[in-house]
Image (cartoon, rainbow, N blue to C red):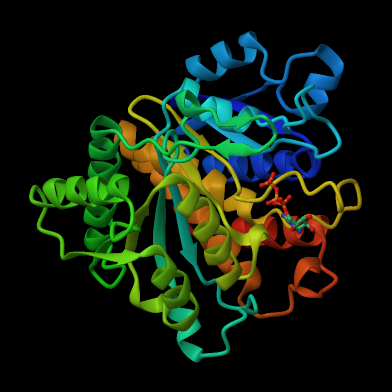
Length: 364
Ligand code: ATP
């Protein structure tokens, strides 16, 4: 029996609501498959923790997360809780820097039965991965912005060869895996603004250097054009990689293509650690009302199991991941489950019940 320790950060707001059913679902999937067991360890961090202790990300939580086999994080932050300088509490971003999680992997896949904004029937074919560089770019901590005399503000964007090479290697490995699974349109696209900024010309140059080590059809697109392509023909894309702030913006846009933030899972992956979390935030407007859609959290749990499976060559973990994904698809397939953010009445309890029942019915 393989035992995996999972550091769990429920965080704030709806994070507290979507975490327990996700952990429960992961246990059910593992029990069904057999051969592996998860030991979750709930850790403190976030805006609530800051209010209670004066620290948003306690050192003990970081150490326990570092020691775990994988990290599951729901959502952190609360616009009403801020540091003295007025900025919001964002320990989830700090964790990316501390654990060097350079690749933000955001799969975007339509779920049959979930209404999508693009009417075209090809919306059913949307299945791409957006990879967001996650520790530098416009978010680089060493490039803190300045404000001089209340008249000039500056920010610095940082691209390094070291992180870019790792990012692109991770990108092409994702393409390789999708090729083996017969998924995608077989292309890897670097999204940048190389026509205007030297930093992005450098980013693209490294992309094509790394591409030489792989047999992947590789191309590039400007970020502004990509914003348009994602609305007019998202089904044409397969694996995309981009800088931090561009990825931040495009990933919310991409989530909207498949139903919204409640359907968008993600993983922040580094050489040694990985954090799995839904793309959405703590959503204080709906927290405590039972309206949160846990689907993105469930799919993030599935990504965690898949990552463990790949890392440890553990077929049981891979099977458990696949079961959760199939259960989500089965639960939504009939179209009767309609979540609140899409105008329906299905809240947290309804979605949890439907996905859990689907999981229990599935054959391994
Ligand atoms: P952050 O800056 O922390 O990423 P955000 O500004 O992107 O947060 P979110 O909290 O992600 O904001 O979500 C924006 C809005 O979308 C929420 O206020 C909420 O109404 C809705 N929303 C987000 N996640 C969900 C969910 N899982 N289920 C239902 N509605 C959601």
